[in-house]
Image 1: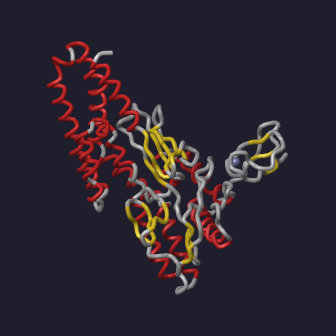
Image 2: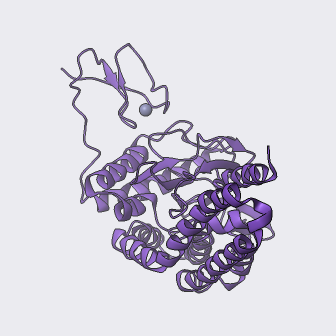
Image 3: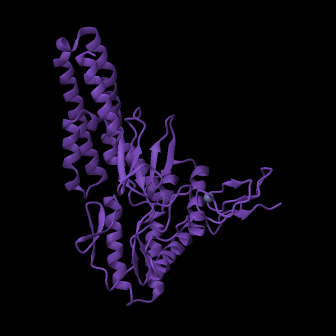
Length: 382
Ligand SMILES: [Zn+2]
């Protein structure tokens, strides 16, 4: 292997590593499909390392980033909070986790830090999104003031308003449009850098030799990386105006590392929709019929939650809190669907004896529970 081949192999290896994102377990990703379009996927079943799950982006799409959203990773009720999500991506399992109920009177003031929620000095829950953590911390502050002081209807209305805002597809669509506009130059630069590194450099090195051509190639690389870092800084300022402290590190990394510059779009994409519900992001990115399917899948999850529906070591108070939050999410999803329930699916396939009301999987042999969701199956009619 020549020096140029070795260099290229190292570069490809580093780039493939950069295409993997480590995210909190249980978030939902919207990634560019291998042949265009967008795929939605829950990370609860993805390969995990500790509290983080691995999600990959197609390496041949340096112009498209990975969007990350999630249902609220914390349950509220008039009595207190449970630091776990009430909902899980459907189809798919629920991320396993342990969570205990904390009453409002025992809960230290909640604050957003490093993209997570902290109560006092301790991490309450991993969020992985600065936007969502800030929104939930503010909401927790308001709910704490209401809990025990205001009537329960007022508490419920405040949660409902926040859920409606997260499910607002007009807001998500406007954000998607802004994201497309602001990342236009960055996407062109990403494709240019990709072609430069994986086509131009190997071709020139092969024809003329690396020793004879390294200086102009290096100049070209520096120019492309510099322009990417500049453009990343500009777009970040527009898309995340209040996040100056989170800006310098990715900008500096893009200026110094070619593989980080190649995936600069991910820096902007990851949290662009952080505080939107996954169903709102689906409405912004998918055709209407597929977005509607996603919305109904979330509603089915709220009605028939995947097992275990409660966090490990949760007691009766935790169960009541998760059930309260799940009920509010179900009501919010129904408002979005204008009162329609999760449509019952008539079985058409011959031999189907039962089906899962959550993931809609068919069962041809006698089964009591869905093998994927753990939900009790429903006997097929007719
Ligand atoms: Zn199922």
